[in-house]
Amino acid sequence: MANVVVVGSQWGDEGKGKIVDWLSERADVVVRYQGGHNAGHTLVIDGVSYKLSLLPSGLVRGKFSVIGNGVVVDPHHFVSEVEKIAGQGISVTPEVLRIAENAPLILSLHRELDALREDSNSGLKIGTTRRGIGPAYEDKVGRRAIRVCDLGEPETLRDKIERLLTHHNALRRGMGAVEISAEAIHSELMAVADKILPFMDRVWDLLDERRKRGERILFEGAQGALLDNDHGTYPFVTSSNTVAGQAAPGSGLGPAAIDYVLGITKAYTTRVGEGPFPSEQDNEIGQFLGEKGHEFGVVTGRKRRCGWFDAVIVRQTVRTSGIHGIALTKLDVLDGMDEIQVCVGYELDGQRIDYLPASMGAQSRVKPIYETLDGWKETTAGARSWAELPAQAIKYVRRIEELIGASVAMLSTSPEREDTILVQDPFQD
Ligand code: GDP
Image 1 (cartoon, rainbow, N blue to C red):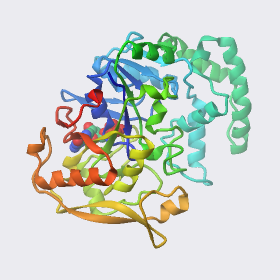
Image 2: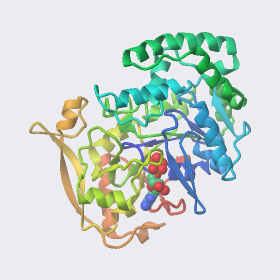
Image 3: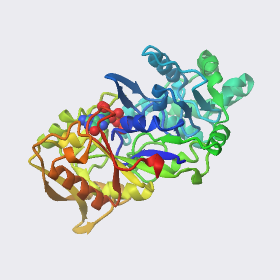
Image 4: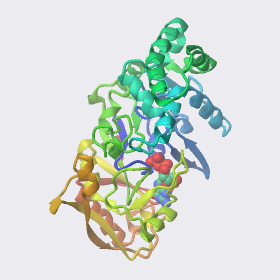
């Protein structure tokens, strides 16, 4: 019996969808514990592609799934995503999905605030997905959020909306936007309340009961550890904690419920939006990786920035997330390269360092120190055993393991779930 947390070990888009899908077949329960509907996952099953951004991936496999309290829920998006996958033949009912009663809601005013800020000429551009996720988390921490449970109490809801608007209308006045009426927010929520409330549950309680019964829980992380609000490239980060430890408070289980942390790690590096990226290749190498790896966002369609594997950041994530083993993905994208570089350290103001510094200034000044490895001409795409891999590819994988201080538990060689080499089953730790 083991509970596994899956976490992205870079800046997200590491291919978590495929690995979560692979593991979810072995799990009894799949739980999301942070983020919102920006967590674009692509699952390819029997040639059919499912794109999810809020719902836990386990639903596609008919697994009991949970949206934990650490997630911010856009109720209108929830309804439309449920309808979309119902159109692909997957029915989402309270039999298979529960939403935490204490999960905060994303409202239209949060989306508007995201846009007002990103479009203003002053301040820092973070490159958000404009889905209202950041502002919803701000209201949660500011103790004024509307939560799922409020939908079942119309009178409390009115009072809470009034309180929330005192804050938001002041902000909006300052930004030159029109004020919002309580009635507008109330009716926006009442329009979907009946579709959300049947899924509402005491998630901390039901997960603990299932855990005690010996069920295997898979915690599905979104984004990546370098986007963590504390440990990432702040302020170019997301508004939640994305490190593996968040699986506990984001679902209501204690930290001892986590038995194994699997870090999903891409064989090169990508990043969406603004922020430091020391090993970025804004040249033909980056273009090669982007085209071959189809590096476009699932949610936004935005082109991802691409670069060499950065062992410094992954080594740091291995420690801040307590990663036991990694799933190395997209090795096949490197097929055919003459040589491959790996960032093994940084130079900061003339000194060599082996960590990503915390300050924004230092993060922008670090220069990558590379080690060059031979590439391979053979294809690794679709390999299902080590014996099918060229010697240079194995050498590359072994060097990565050495540099990051964690071993490869799984190796992914194509988008298809069967094209996976298993070294260690995280559930059988
Ligand atoms: P996530 O947000 O971490 O789940 O990442 P994405 O959903 O954006 O996944 C990245 C993309 O890479 C998807 O289109 C996957 O189908 C694809 N993918 C996943 N693993 C592999 C792999 O090993 N090789 C290749 N070529 N593609 C992969």
